[in-house]
Image 1: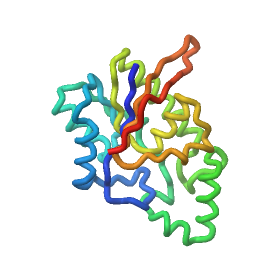
Image 2: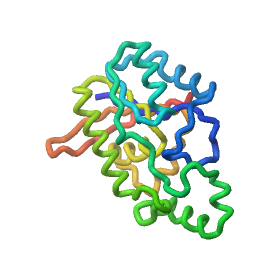
Image 3: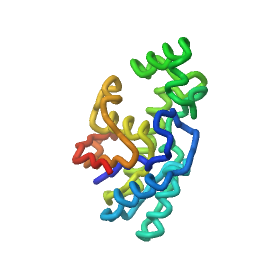
Image 4: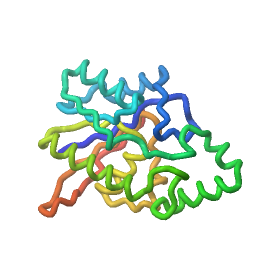
Length: 198
């Protein structure tokens, strides 16, 4: 199947760690989403329940008369006490700066304070991929989500090591297209076909 993973548009919150903190898209964000979905034909659109992903998905589903599923497994990583804070402010505190550096260095061993652990996040995104694959029944599918779940999905589908995930720039409105399949044992395989920046 063809799976297109689309990060939501600009919320005007560059520099903030917004996981579950949920600000709406600004005008530029709406334009990014319209641009990235203008030529697409997806029978199925799946979205995170957070408004910055859900609302553009609902608008697309209404405009294109396609089926829509809201799936909480595509929500952004819960960043706990860091959620909604400016990264610069977190780094200004020595203890938080060291924790943040350790998290980015090895998210499997270090979690955001009071936030979601990487293992649970991986299980959640894998479950989201299984559901999307089953719901798509071979049809092209668009998932409107966040940078975190996109990175995790790329790791699962094409084997990018966790240590290399931060090297992938997924700005607002970035779309990654993949050909995806599953082997007899249920494991996914994937091929990255394109990455389109708005």
